[in-house]
Length: 276
Picture (spheres, rainbow, N blue to C red):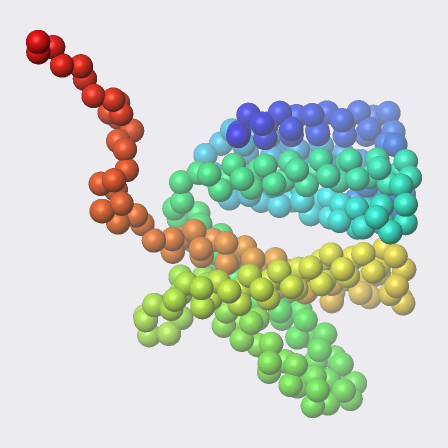
């Protein structure tokens, strides 16, 4: 799998390097990504290619996530192809962003296949604090609306969402022991974390960006960026913390299961008998 990821990253980086030198092809909406810079995908691919050959999981996972974030327009282009028809610039954007998403997923898969350890716990802490930071960004915006006279509705919103923005991510970071050291069932935390994190990421990170690209939002993008960024960080942080928590707390195989597993160091066939 590492060789496939390395090959894909090499091709992705070389193609984007050629585009950076000779000029990019026409893309839908005028650009391949929301992030400017012709050499940015080349740098991301090079960093990911170096991380593929190393043993650390966190750098490789971060590089894969960065490639996916750079190719965030992929679902928007795919939806526009379905509802607005096929065009050359849309097919070009779909190929470029799809390749970035594929390379990012390959990096995450390779990082996932490596042995778990303290990096998973650090990744859980990282995701938890990213989620808390994103939630606090949303709360700050809500408090501005509260000062503007929105009143009890905004107060109820802050009170209702505070467990998912503070208690849930920090409980994931503490490996399911947020109270007096009593363990919490895994899926009691994983279920809400995946549902809330996926919903927030889809709503703010994908649907929100699609609505902005389509021109459905009134006002400049800079005024909308804190809200979209806060919700996206909140959701993606929860997903990262939940995935790491799931890996760290995965039960080890029992002794009975190990007894039934074939040994990797011994052949599965029996030695022939030389007795006549």
